[in-house]
Length: 84
Ligand SMILES: [Zn+2]
Image (cartoon, rainbow, N blue to C red):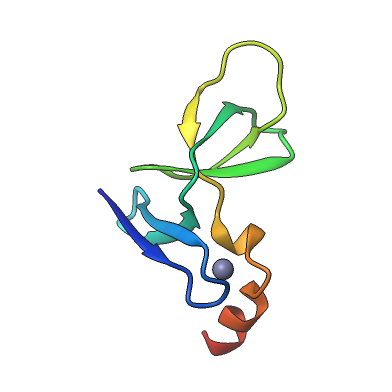
């Protein structure tokens, strides 16, 4: 289940992606292709799973489509952390 909304901080379109533990993680609405890699430098949030370490810049076939956590890209993410 994916809920679409707008970031209260920067106004970007975001979605809440549900993790394996039932926690909703705010992510960029844009889907990206990723390749799972335990030693990768990037992290994506996979629907029904949660954060997965991966590479977003890779060669070959992608593992699938996922989203980047909005905390990683929001210019005002620091304000959310202070409030929380
Ligand atoms: Zn934002």
